[in-house]
Amino acid sequence: MAHAPEAAAVTRPPVRPGPERPFPRRRRTTRYGPLRSVSWWFLLPALALYLYVVLAPSLRGAGYAFTDWTGLGSQVSFTGLENFRKVLDDPAARDALWQTLLITVVITVAQNAIGLLLALGVDSRIRSRNLLRVLFFAPAVMTPVVTAYLWRYMYAPEGAFNTALETLGLGSLTQNWLGDPDLALWSVAAVVIWQFSGYSMVIFLAGLQSVPRELHEAAGVDGAGSFQRFWHITRPLLAPATTINLMLSMIGGFKLFDQVYVTTGGGPGHATETLSTLIYKNAFQFDEYAYSTALAVLLAIVVAAVSAGQYRGLQRQKGMS
Image (cartoon, rainbow, N blue to C red):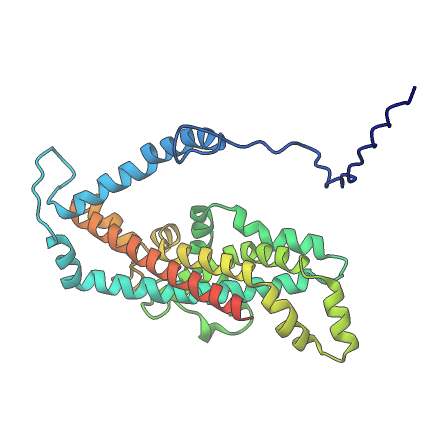
């Protein structure tokens, strides 16, 4: 009896193993539209609190700039842009705006220049670098009011500065530091620069420590000097720290109030008046709350515009470098 031929064996091509994945990929599905991640639900309480505590009162307060509200009672009438026209016609507001811009530029340039020099100094391998970092940063921990009172006593006619000059035989250089209209603004600026240069130093120091040492060593082997290494290596890599420092110092200069109010109160005359002190005086001394709110809105617009322009300029420079 003949046997049936055996069925031919079926051969299949080998399957190539794909890359192993430690975790299977899951597709996120939700029916809540834009909220495509569960993390949004953790963010919503903070956003709601921010809207209720910060944004809503700010927008409501900005609305009073278009009224004649005196701060007392509930009688409010809409006046449109009258308060803003008053700001443009007020010589005190124009002087305060100019002095605010001037002291902001001085503080921003000097504070960051000194902070960068201090950071370069304490980034070296000197033995006392840790102690110097603490000493330079210590003034930033003090409250601005305490610092202003301290410098107010040192600036006094019989204070530490004039006493030291007389002791050194330089009595002809003694000044009425806070009473002279030509010196008062610079004296206040010196207080802010002294207090916050250490703060800028810390930010610059963090940026310096992120610069690879290998780049400096390679540039040194190629014959680059200290200034060339700083300009072509350190400076471009410090762009993030520079952006942060310039933004913080500029915003702080525009909002400057404590040091001015404690040391000079905006005087002598209006020589040191800033927008912040003018806002305070119009609100709590002259009972012109609507006008002071218009000044505050103007200050917020100036700060936002200058900060945005500065940020875009620095980002463009960072991209070019």
